[in-house]
Amino acid sequence: MMTIKEIIQIIEKNAPRTYAEEWDNVGLLIGDETEEAHGALIALELTEAVLQEAIDGNFNLIITHHPLIFSGIKKINYHDPIGRIIRKVIANNIAVYAAHTNLDNAPNGVNQMLARKIGLQNATILSPQQHLENTAEQIGSGVIGTLPEPMDEKDFLLKLKNILNIPLLRHSGFVGRPVSKVALCGGAGSFLIHSALEQNADVFITADVKYHDFFTPDKKILLVDAGHYETEQFTTSLLLDILNQNFSNFAAQISCLSTNAVNYLI
Image (cartoon, rainbow, N blue to C red; front, top):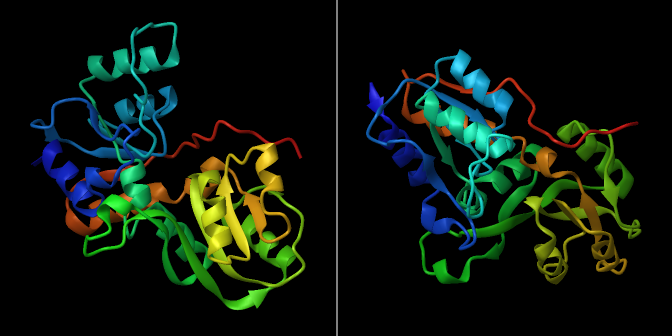
């Protein structure tokens, strides 16, 4: 058997906590890292249903991308979903670990995974972290790369819809030129719109785009909101790959449940 600490060390070898943004809350959020790990359940976020899945499957470690505890908690109220989860996690002696922006910013992290799914070539970091500019690896937000062959804008969006298995896409007006250079940032990445423009991307794919942000491209770039869950859905596979490559006999499993809080009426 191995300890929870050994599992964490492997994850953080690929995505050190120093890669995380200052406002983020990553690492072991609940639990004792010195305890043995009996198995890990991986999910994009920890919901009550995912927690019950972990209990039923006898997993004593839950690894998520989005932190359960994000900002400061002043009360643990059992009428609140977060409070109920914290209570039940502790009662069942389950550890909760989050790899969030440290995994986003890692050189082979969330955004590189999305870039591979889309088929981008020569993918590099869109906005490198300045305080880590002297590291051997390029670390930072977003990714930019090129398609193997230029595509019509509408055809590219239809392909993206299919890859992400999403019923709809929000996007700015078509620019009127083929898509070749693609920038992306899984999750909320509107802060990178100007970086995508500066690097002459034909399209920028992200999520949580506000209404007024769609005016920013000014017909110079196709801005696409492909959904927060949808653009980060491959993160669980990324985490599972990290564990499987390092622990051949450890029981790690991706949650069978969708944690997407957004529903679509088509």
